[in-house]
View 1: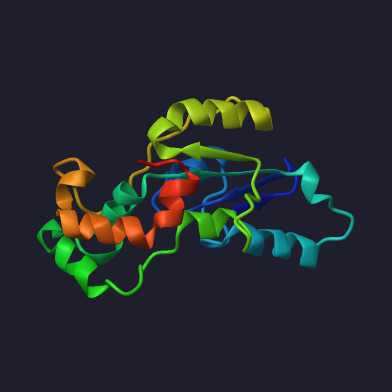
View 2: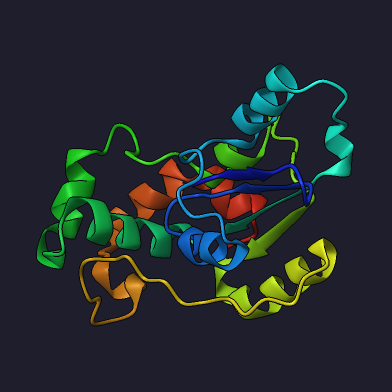
Amino acid sequence: MSLIDFKNKIIFIHIPKTAGSSIEKALGAEGGRGHLTVNEMLKIVKDHTIGINLDDFFKFSIVRNPLDRLVSCYDMFVSNDMTKFNDWIYCHEDATPFKSQVAFLCDEDKNLKVDFVGKFENLQEDWIEICKRIGVDIELPHIDPSKGMLEKPYIQYYIPETEAIIREWLKDDFEFFEYA
């Protein structure tokens, strides 16, 4: 859940399935405000505070390879029967059932609205950088709320056609965050 910490001047944008639960636990702020976009979070701060300069806040998030993230989302929210994964993608071929990461972190013109974007694939290194920027030295716990146990690398759950569908659905994520 996205969080605002007024005392430490931190805004964390929690994109589903990007280690957000682990980050929340590390910061002692579990159960934040839902999976809100940076624009929604900034509006909350602006609408409910006086004399707060948003530039004083460290705004950050973590992103994940869209193909990996979608497999994890399916496993967590839809079914842990991965044999039906590609059928599920075909059923949603007209529109992705999950919001793009760009939509969470950018304005309508695709301008990045956070100060730091870490990558799930480099989580430990990026967590060290986040800790430096917020002035803490906290171990990042591993919280894995996924209900299923994925038995193989995420890319092996796709067939060429469904991988192409996901690459089109989430084209902005692949390009903006430089995922191949």
